[in-house]
Length: 129
Image (cartoon, rainbow, N blue to C red; front, side):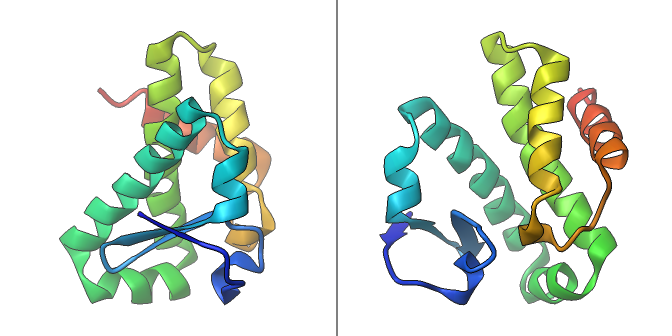
């Protein structure tokens, strides 16, 4: 993990962290605002991306940039991992799904899904065992 303060283009759309080629870059100001639990949750999300990228190689980045369907699948899996962590910790399942679905609606992801679709996708991901 690398905490950075520089204004990278990746952060212009509101992202607090990004995983690239085996490294997780996190805005220092964003990290400082997170509780230790939320830091762990963020790292769960980014670790999911580390695995995804390792499995697919450079193709992952090309597909992530150019394929809305692929980008959505990758983010649903990563936010689903975070949601599962919260649910195991005792958070309300439906509230957790809705909270992470809201993340998928952010401008960072270029309007790739609507609210109902995000909730359904995350509910399906969370229910995988």
